[in-house]
Length: 251
Length: 251
DNA sequence: ACCTGAACACCGTTCAAGT
DNA sequence: ACCTGAACACCGTTCAAGT
Image 1: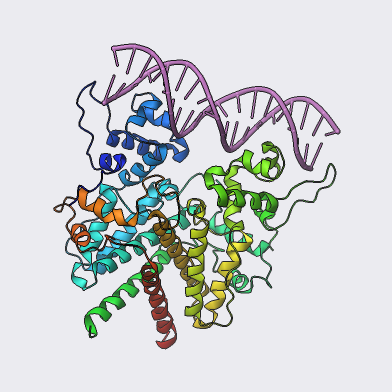
Image 2: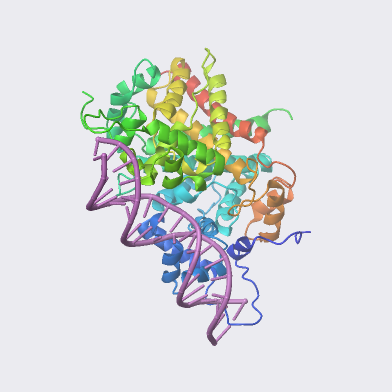
């Protein structure tokens, strides 16, 4: 079992399994080097600065040489999404809830640090060594809770999705970046004003009320840390209730 | 109040406020027409089929003419993300929990129907008339609960993020689309096999155990409707607990 | 087998010129 | 004021040719 069908080439390379080279010149590169160069470029100049040509020149090679290591630019982006992730926080024997709080917040912070990830992270099932390590640690944290493995995966997935949502929102409000304006991005302070100007109170009654009450960020950060914690606790309360149901009640 | 500073031109146009045209030939287009054409193209051919040239030719105009209506392609994509959303489900006096369940599921289904939205929806704060109507209905559903307006917004945001996460996952597993392979997308059935082949049990102990237990989709749909409901109830349980806390306890 | 260089079929966006 | 057409500076990807 296990050798069923060959791994997709990029996946194999993400796990360090570069193909055995028999004859001909030794490869000058590997996927990890290329990915690291692309990530550095994205961090410095955004995703717009990442082209096959720019990545290639950064590793000292012609653009077309990259296609020895990567089937397409899309595959390179997938590898970047994995390669940009640092190791997950150490469990240190923390209670599952404390650890998952740290774990989720760390994910959000990574996304804010490398905001180009927001565009790349399609939330597709993780395939690379880094993202899967994060998943492993979340499952480990839930080990003593009596949840089924499938449920643990669902919990981790929901938390990852929440981190992405929050990061995108903060970023969209201009909270993460100097380049404020790209593509309809509005500062938090302006957001409420904008809605007030544009909304028809008859068609949008509840929203108009919320705007008038100041809930849409007339002042500072509409999306601040308190909001992050709020939603996170919503989720974790749900998880905790489930755990009690599983362990407390019959069956 | 309200006339503070001029709206960004695209935002104004999204709300049907085309500028008053004084002299010169009457415009042949408006943003709504352009957006609709772009959405049709994206539905038919994916985001790859949407170029300024292809959209322009679909509305019978030169590519460069679109820049009278849109500052950049990025702005067009923002308008598309709003324009693709149908009206939200009718409240019909449902209980908040029943309505938000329908509301969230409907959002997920829209994303699966127009899977190009997964790439476009940056989860930036909604600015268009359609997405804001969805927000309005969620706030309305929570009207009787005693939550503060800001909390209602946070709840709606978390649910929208959850819908996006789930849709991306289902789509990533090939559950939504005929074109199975683009960019490292794996069928759910293969996913477990793949992980089994690639994981070092010492470095990924919890994940290896989950794979062996079959939780990572050795069989059919790793992400099925039961998983969606599971995570949704996690969130809604959290909301319900908060509501009880607010109304039951002192202060 | 690895890498290069030329070539192909596109992109998004600008700008001057027509009406 | 709206739209066109030419032009610019790019893209990602292919393929034959070198070593």
